[in-house]
Image (cartoon, rainbow, N blue to C red):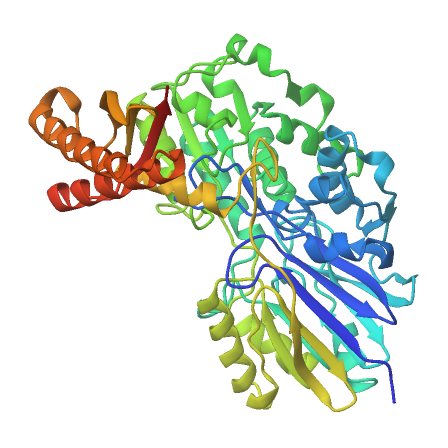
Length: 553
């Protein structure tokens, strides 16, 4: 009998982001990706959402390393947080490590890890794991699929990918190696990206964006052009730069991550721009509008990003207006739509012309669509198929594609965060579950939990009512109050009669408890909350947060 292999899913299933899984083989653990997720609109005050690190913390001595498929935040962004508690080496491409390094270094945690660069086709031994890195095409350069050669056969993690036959860097997905694996050892399990599994057809090539950008640059020859995209979308930035140079413009970068990533890409030879064409952001205003192109961060409408500051007229580098054309060369991540629309509105109010993917083909997805997924499945011919990376509907759509392409329906599994699969001689089965809750970041890790989020939702949706009462514990009388302070429930100056009635009812409830001989603070506060909550709900059909404050003398 061969040793079983277990797969722990800590994030990325039923959601966009938090991609993180762990492979267990012979008691050792290998992490694949460790990403973050941007908060939903109802996660009030939350900065980021991380995977649940409970399982990893409890098994820290068994972790031999982390392999990363590519450098997007939803795959490497949580490394800077987990390295505060754990230490392990990280393996990935030069770009993936470069993007991860920026964050880890800012957190002062480089001494917690070693960054090990891998090349296309490399096959490494990491502890007991036999790991192969296959090139794939995605919206960030040097992305990889991960091939695990295990006692239970070949297990493939597709990474994020698409079939781009004309990529900017001529680096294509290695279908030949996938086919070779299928025909020789066979593929026991394929875990594949589901993001665009609902989308018919093929994803457009990244190079299709270049001509669109060049056309927009020609049409706006006398206007300053500001483009915004993911700072990690280096091939998109390269095409923007080529369009700018073709029209005789200087290029300035705006936003720290954009500046860092462009510098890194130039060092690696991925971005080609002469030094003479680069200008400092402080000198943008020294040029005529038609002489400059600004490459900015903020395509997702992040409140403090460079583009958001421009839309509010708060940027220290320049003011935008009627001479500016803004190109949003991106697509909004689910949950960020309202932020992006707010930025577009702000720029439009300032007189800018805004071009986005809704009106022009200035963006191409980095994720495979249905026909590409079918092609991948036909080449790999996996025995078992597990859709990953996507919201639940994406996973279901991807599962259906697996069945369509001949995978036994009983061997197509839809898994959830926290599930543990065991690959054994008899097949693949659900083994157990591990904690996979959201870990919220609000300034610092662990600062808030589910209870705090629940309270914030109540405050945002229903408001708060604070009732202050002072009682004499000896005479068992109400000395002062009840005084009601409210925010977000009713506007006090316009609701005096309602508040007076509430005070009378709460005072009667307190006096009744005191007459019964009770002067315990907890009992009194509980009665205040009960009486106030009942009154508020009956009279206004609302459920604000009730905060009783009972003081004794």
